[in-house]
Length: 133
Image 1 (tube, rainbow, N blue to C red):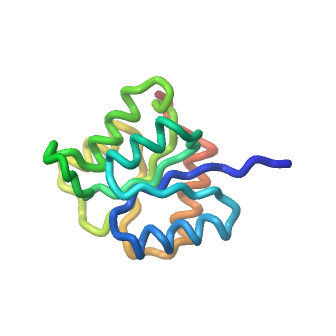
Image 2: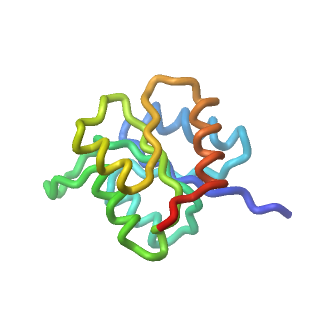
């Protein structure tokens, strides 16, 4: 039996999260969900994850000013996750500083709304050519 690629979707807008996870599942991925940095960290600590789709603007109830880019930096600084493909999924244009961080950490940026087929193509390409670490 072939193991399905596991994608962690970190998105706080539940309708978007649900639609994206359903789309990923329909095309053969195993989609896990997280709606915050904390939830993503819990999932990463307990589940095998092959790739991450990451919203930039996430709520941080603890007031620590963490965002999707904070999680991206953590992934790249952690040996177990340094080569995991990350696709940033955002509806808001990134600032120049955020663009620099995304490039530095080898994440591809995908702006909402675009066809999910484009997102799937980008994700598939990232899985074939992961970051150098």
